[in-house]
Image (cartoon, rainbow, N blue to C red):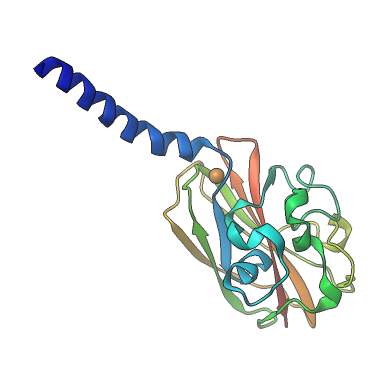
Length: 197
Ligand SMILES: [Cu+2]
C-alpha cells in the first residue's frame, strides 16, 4: 500500500514539474511591448477596438527570426506573418494612437514577457523619413539598420525587460518595429508601435 501511494505521489509530482516545462516549449505565448505601446498592447487594453483575437494574446506575435533578411513578408511584418492577427498590419488610415516622443531623445523600452526564452537580442527599427503611413509596413519603409540593439547573448530575461536607448532625429508620425530574437528557436517576436515626434 505504502509503495503504491508513494508511486502515485511521485507521478503527481512529476506531472506538476513537467507541465510548466511543456508549456514553456509550446509556441503560444511570449511577449509584447508596453512602451512604446504596441498595437497589440493597445488592443489588449481596449484603447483600440475591432482588433480580432490579438486582444486576448498580445504576446503571440511570433514569426520566423532573421529580420530583415528573413522574418515575416513585407506587408505582414506587424502581425509576424500570422493571418489571424492581420488587423495589426492595417494602418487604419494613420489613426492608431501614437505615443509622443522626442527627436534624438532617450526613450525607455519595456516588454512584458509571459515566457522567458533564451534571448539573442532586442532590436528596434524605425520608419525612414518620407515613409508612407497609410500603407502596411514593408522593409523598404524602414531605415535598414536598427537604431538600438540590446544583446543578451543567450541569457534568459525576467518577466519584464526595460532598457533605454536613444531615438534618431525624426519628425512627424513614425512606426517603431521592436524585435525580440530568440536564441534557441527559429523564431522572433514582432511588435509595432506608433509614435509621433
Ligand atoms: Cu515563446
